[in-house]
Length: 232
Image (cartoon, rainbow, N blue to C red; front, side, top):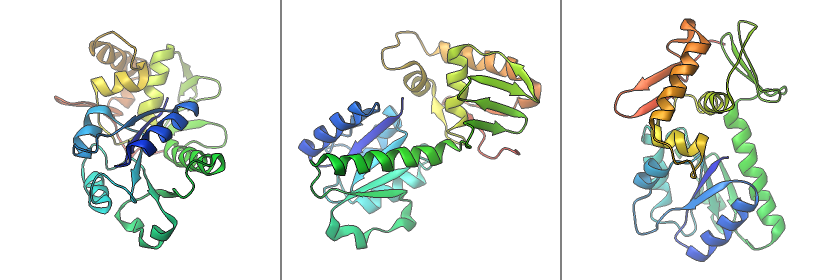
């Protein structure tokens, strides 16, 4: 389930948007307008950031540049929420991935457009082909059939091993803490400790094989990441 961060200085709007996102099957959270955004994202994580340019929690352009400069958030897509009169002022060179016009925000069709934009950004991020297959060299994952193969030979993963590998494969280059991986893969309700992540990473490495030793990297004192550049 994808995590969506809402960064807006308009609390009523943020609450309404959060309800919409829950209804669409996402896991949203609203940033505290009184606190800096970057530390909140580092602590809670996000697959997409909805940054309100018309009523931001600060200088939205400056915030965007800071997020794109930070290792933890530089690959996180940012969708600008803006008013019609402000569209011409948007600068996509700072790292914006898309935008949505807030005018008449309480009309369902307008919200439907935002849903479509979010899902399109997630589709681009996932790097899936038309057959729902993710590839990393000789390693392939078929998301439709829950099959994984190395060099054409199937390997058998548990459900959580599969979900952990899928999450890392679709977020290449990003570093995730153990707590972050627990939230993304196991869910907020999971009561186990972070050692669970270490155990599953170790099992994944063993099953994938030694030729992929460097595929999932350990970032000391932080967590794990899957290397971004993979020869397909």
